Each structure stands twice: as structure tokens, then as C-alpha cells.
Image 1 (cartoon, helix red, strand yellow):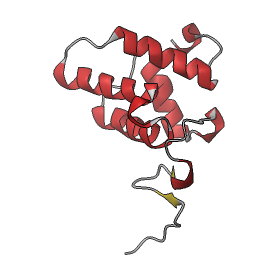
Image 2: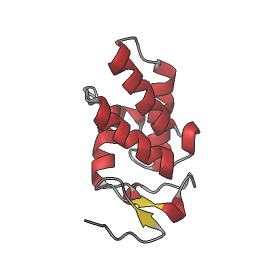
Image 3: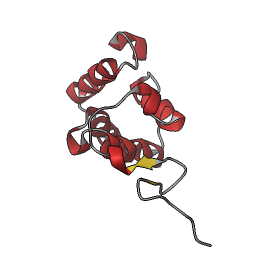
Image 4: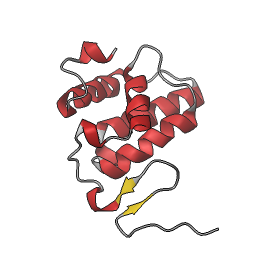
Length: 115
């Protein structure tokens, strides 16, 4: 069974990837798919996701649509996945950077609102 995909929009799963807007770093909260937004908010919450595959799904989206490997949401998702896989403490500074980034993007007015 073949699947038709346009040149500027592909997906590996149900999360669309907008090829024309990759690694632009220009993210508007309204552009973030609902599932990725939910996972991202979960990563900022008191009880973040514990399934590394779910977290990596969000990491992939942020890497593609954000600032690539330097995107704070991507970096935190990878850090959280490392924590889940190795049970070592996570980097608090990277978490703080992630929260500040979400505020900058407009996901919340203050970092404490994300927790």
C-alpha cells in the first residue's frame, strides 16, 4: 500500500512535518500539533512522561521544526530520555532553559505556570 505525500509535507507517523518550515526556529504555539503540545507541556509538569518513545517523538518534532540540535525543547526531551534510560539525575539548568524557552514561545506567561 503506497501513501501519497506532497513535497513540502511528509510524516513518519501521524505528526505532520512541514519541510518548508524546518529548523527555522520560528515557532508559534498554534503551529505545534496537539499531541506534541501535550507532550511538551507534560515535560514541563511535575509528572513528566515516563515512556522514552513518547518523549523522543516530541524531541524529533522540536529538532525538525525548532532550532535543530540547539533547540531547548529538543535538548530537554533528549536529557529527560537519558534520565529515563540511565536513572541518573537530569540537568536542572537545561530544564530551566527549556521552561524559559516555552515562555518565550508563548506557551505560558511565567515559568511557574508550566509546572
